[in-house]
Length: 359
Image (cartoon, rainbow, N blue to C red; front, side):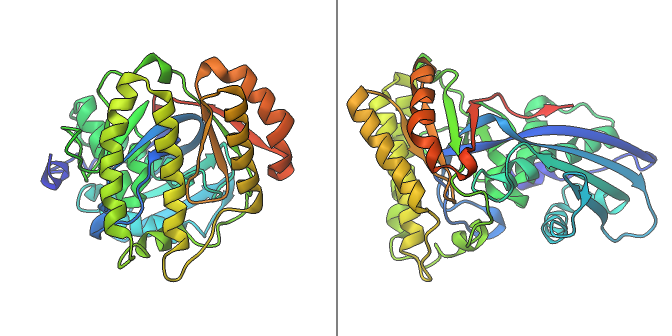
């Protein structure tokens, strides 16, 4: 599909008002995307687990208005939030040609998260994907046409990408690929695609315990971090590494090789943060407790012949990934050894999920 496939030709302008509501999950990348080109195009491909419990719930009410200026109010956790306005304004400007009706309505956007905002759990991914899905539901009502589920999801992913790159991976589940890669035939830079190969039972109902090391705002935003890959001395090698790792991860997910899964996932997490530490200016998002948790995971894995592993997003929090078969033992380990390194002892129990849900 091309960009032209997502341009709305015509729609029914008589719809006066309405409301739609979606729940959209966050996701955790196994192969990391870091660095982007113009128009939110990724510099390298990625693949992610869609989560289940970490999600954003967004209700979008709309009513016909006069004039052609963008008009919207944003409420976060029940309170009007002006801080989100610039990002949504930019999002609307980017997607206007694909959903031109957004100039015809005033929108009331009411949103909430089931997890701490801006703490490295990809809140922009779940938030922007929920917003994109709401707009797609409105488009469906205005167009009067029943698009295929495939088209609906791909355009929602396409729109979400223009708000936040990783948001395009939150529409579907359980695994989503974003970015053109030779080993994935339907992969695209424009939207995320569901991983369609057979997934080995080892990865069914995979678990993700998110250890909240630091719930505060990140020192450096992901947007700034991505830009620092331009001219980075190691960027080209990193982009090639991501392509190679995605090709190998595809085979690992099919053959069930948990040991190799652990190696690739942890290497990708550390490489992501190595790119941050070697950019100019350089920065570190990991905290001392992040490193303490990583070392204890390594020790536990060696002593117990476990398949537990960690990954990190652009933040200090640690995602602890493990097969469902190890659930009881790993949570005992978390509660006895790792919870002390979490802020206020908080962590989130999550599991790989199926994608967004209309409410």
